[in-house]
Length: 381
Ligand SMILES: [Cu+2]
Image 1 (cartoon, rainbow, N blue to C red):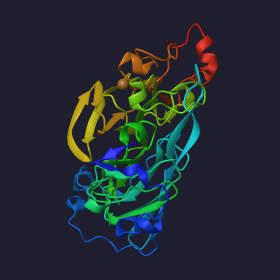
Image 2 (image 1 turned 120 degrees about the vertical axis):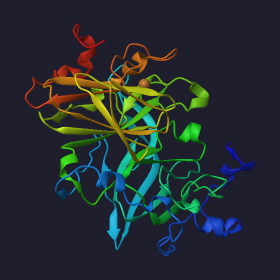
Image 3 (image 1 turned 90 degrees about the vertical axis):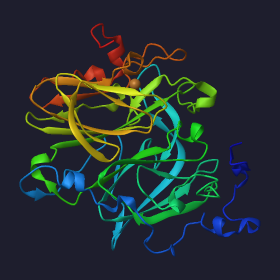
Image 4 (image 1 turned 135 degrees about the horizontal axis):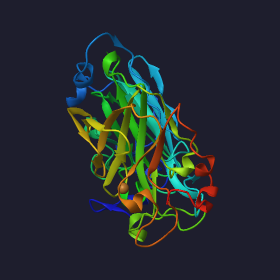
């Protein structure tokens, strides 16, 4: 049983039983009469000056980010409020090709990471979370400047977590400045986060200088899992301490089914969110990767060969596509590129890796995206 600030929070199992009908508990049911837009101070309301003031020339719409293997969710816009609905539950997901294919995970709307939420600077967001997990949960908005009551820390800013079967409305609150952010559970995190309750949240500018507009904008959430066997429920940290399956967007490289196609001359943007327990060192072959943004704020452009991303960090890197071919982008810890830890699985050579494929280059061998990869004597190992 989880205990937060001395309070055994798992005792709340039914939404607002009569004995629990307190103001805090009433907030655990779906509401249609939520308070109006927050007037709380919001340090993030300096709507994205960094991005919007970078570059020169005409302004235009930004490129819509895409998250390979993961849905994009724009929510429903009414007035200035964009409402997202997320359901936390347990399900089976294709995470790898070898030596197992599926694992039982926790996520949102049937995906781990959950859908990438897209909002625009200047908007307010509201997130309705339904809990279909077997235990309580909460949602925290990571990197945003939400009001304290919407921070989702069980037992502190959210006295009563969302009970199993319940729901909770977070916001509306100002989404703040442009950048790459995230959402994740803040209840029993060493279980819930490690089972997959996380996702990316992107705040776009309404317009940006076209000279800095990316032709391709991809979101990559880094995760690691320890399934006990085919289809099994992934182990939380306390049971495991080992995370032998290193993934991007919930899949090993081969399980992603497709390379990311780019064209010569493209400016390619990669938004990285590290939702795992470990540092990753993300490396692109054949190009300089340029760090342009850390944790939602632009940084002086820095050319580098690897980008170190700590747990909970965001980093945005870019590269100019000037070297046609099929190029891998991967964590440079060898046991994360492959799937191997001190204990657990051994022999799954493709982990936290994706391929950028120029449209003029030979196709990536189809065997790479299937179990046949492992039988090939020339496969990457
Ligand atoms: Cu790594």
